[in-house]
Length: 101
Image 1 (cartoon, one colour):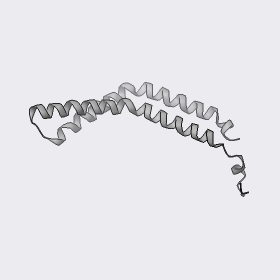
Image 2 (spheres, rainbow, N blue to C red):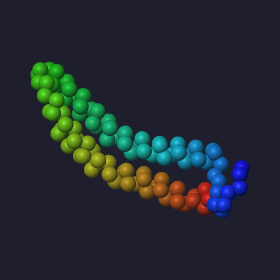
Image 3 (cartoon, rainbow, N blue to C red):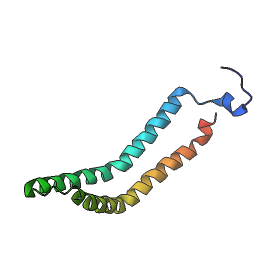
Image 4 (spheres, rainbow, N blue to C red):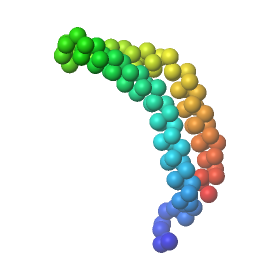
């Protein structure tokens, strides 16, 4: 490794730690977004079936119910989402001294 004038670059994290941190971050993001995406998908599917059965082909009909459903799902899931993100952030900051070595 080339010597640089930045002293903090001499204590780089190893590759496995960086990969683990990235994997955990992606896992948390997917875990938090999955319920909202599932609600949007289900509402969109129900509205699509309704439009097909009734032969109503209005493309703007799906937007408002999807937005309302996702917003309600967000309100319902918010306490759990906050708990997950606070737990992850506390674990990340709690191990910050280990990452700085």
